Structure formats: structure tokens, C-alpha cells
Length: 191
Ligand code: MN
Picture 1 (spheres, rainbow, N blue to C red):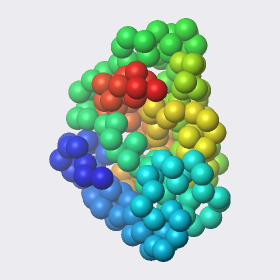
Picture 2: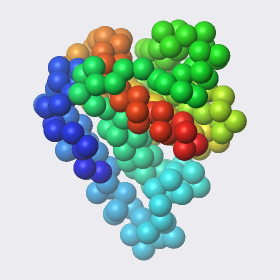
Picture 3: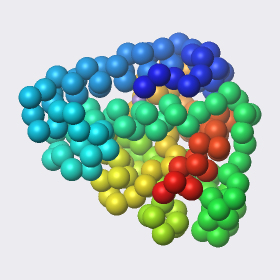
Picture 4: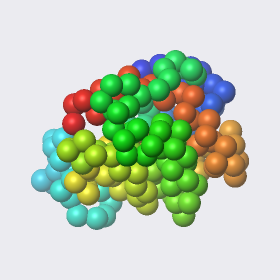
């Protein structure tokens, strides 16, 4: 995917340097690896989501999962303070289920901090509109568990180490400043 913003747009929450490595090197490597792995297989030409939902664990899933996860991740950001807060149906669902937006954020950050090793923390919906905060290791995605992903934070060290070193909690807390809730609201409405 092409970034929908300039590489310095998310600073200082995510620096241009981190974005250049994360989007320009790590994600590119997953794309190149997947293309090599699916060449000549039944998965060649299939949609990324179809591969992630259906393929067995292994190299194809690892790379397809990481591409899908990063597409959702990079696609949800905007310049610091751009947006804000959830609105509409999503705001109502968050309040109903977690008590408040702040309590949801707290629970989400805790899930990110306590995820051991590399992985992703997610806010997803089950299609009935109920919300779920889940942790998944490595390249796993909520779609493999019957959920529709809405919001994610990458807790692989490559996502934050250049800017925050070992301070994963600080990184997760700062990420709220660049979440574009218009994107998350839209994902919820499209579920
Ligand atoms: Mn990453």
C-alpha cells in the first residue's frame, strides 16, 4: 500500500525515520516474501483477506497476515490531533461496553503492554456490533477468529524501538494522538 500521508506527517508520535523503515523496509519485505511464496500455488492472485482467513499456518500466512495487519495499521493514522474521538454508532457501542472511551483506551493499552513478545492488539467487532479487544501473536489477525478488525496497534519492536526503545507503554499511549477515527468509524459502519 501507498501511505495516505507524508512520511513526516505522524511525527513526533511516529518519526519519519521509523516510518521509512517500518513501511519502506519491513512491509516491503513481507510483500516480496509473499509474492515469492505464492508463485505457482493455489493462492496466487487471491485476495489478501481470503488467504489470511483460509490458509494453514506457515510462511504464506505469516507474510499475508503481516501485510494485511500493516495495511490496516498504516491506513488508520493521520496527523497528530487530526481527529479525535469515535462518533455515532461506534461511540455508543464503546460507551455501552466499556463504560467510556477512556476505559476502552485503558483496556486496549493494557492488552498491548501485556502481550508477550511480538504481535498485535486489536479492537474488533463480531458483526452484531459487539466489540472485542484481543491480543494476537506474530502475524495473526482477528479475521481468522470470526471478527472484523477496526483498530490495531503493532507491538513488534520494529514499530517503536527507534523512537521509544523499550518504552512500549509510552508508545501505545502516544498512538491515540494519530488515530483517525473517521477511518475506524467507517470500518465499523461497513462491518
Ligand atoms: Mn510492523
